[in-house]
Length: 146
Image 1 (cartoon, rainbow, N blue to C red):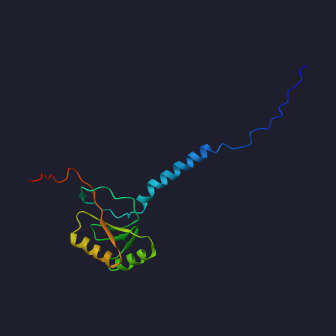
Image 2: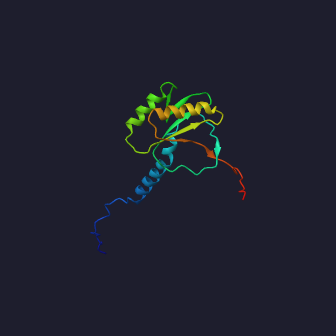
Image 3: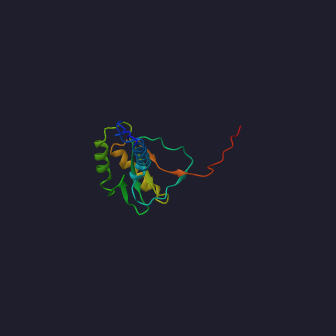
């Protein structure tokens, strides 16, 4: 008869956390990519095209103006008359310096309506304003004359 060999070494009691960390990092990356999209209003807007560089990732507040005249501040729909008060309240609640108010207006909206929104945003206390556009095609060709 052979004698049995008894293994007296302790077993591995730990959990391999590497796969858990990998999954957590992927979820964080997905969250960081989708977060800016979630802060834009659901109003359907067809933005005009322009030859511009992309907007830096700064602290911004979005005002959306649809072709039907509906207004929203980020995801909150507001009326034209309430725009200065609501925007002023939101801007006062944010203590960030240099917040940019981006006006997202449909390309078919008359510019007078866009100008009115810009004036109301300025009245509400917005120091920095921008108009959202999409990246255009070739742009304007210009040849300098000497």
